[in-house]
Length: 197
Ligand code: GRF
Image (cartoon, rainbow, N blue to C red; front, top):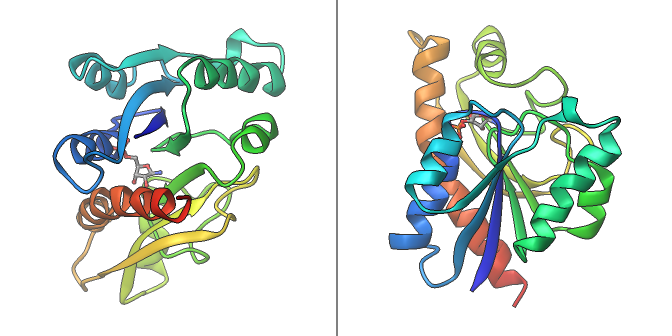
């Protein structure tokens, strides 16, 4: 059984999908979520973690003198929880090199578009979906990839397309993509676990 830590900043619906899958879905018997770390103390994801009886901590960047010590505090929590895999799920910061090095090819991220298109700094949340609409794309989708210490550049693990319709708004497209995110994140984690066996 692999232990998963999830890093979040917001609502945590992807985190919830991973938890649900570990209980009743494709991750059942393969993985369990043992830790949730949020850099926002008011994040709804933290409430979800409490409801699920999963250890959760809030670690704010402003409490630390630099990025290294901030990431080091997170790394200590990961180690304390004996996490094997780190899943970024709506986590709005770059992960420190200290974490990436300690968890080489074991830090995963999900991005709400078909990378390498529509990724990079500033490409998050509704900005991604607006850019896809502005680009008059017929397809968008979700991508799970290994995280490195840059934005959205690590090796791809899994990708799934969703259609973009003529009358789509940021919101309607975001909703369709998010539903797909919830499906492929657990599948991508399963793929990583099975490959590592
Ligand atoms: C998702 O669209 C994810 O791809 C992006 O931020 C959103 C987070 O949603 N990085 P949630 O917090 O998992 O509900």
